[in-house]
Image (cartoon, rainbow, N blue to C red):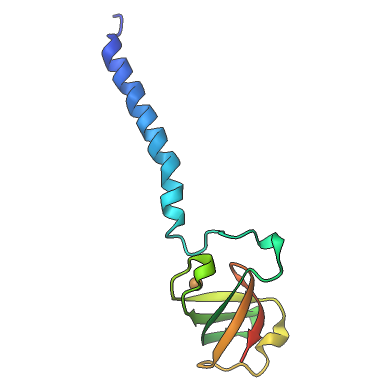
Length: 115
Ligand SMILES: [Cu+2]
């Protein structure tokens, strides 16, 4: 009935390995997670700037969808994604298909739009 020491030790080693892998996993995932925070947003007004084409405008929800180019500062690849807009006035006269430059105050919020 006394457990043999070797299997118990193997189990411990497996648990240790699993913990080790699970600790590494978030780091590996973060490099591929488009929305992983990579810069301290509180340290500055503009987190990063980007360029892209307006794909969709949802003025009622203060949102736009932008097909943006890669944003190196955030390690973001080019992609189409929705953003909140800090000020509804930024959407005034904006058109789908228009090319814009934009500033981000955080990963999901546009604080300025340039035409
Ligand atoms: Cu994106």
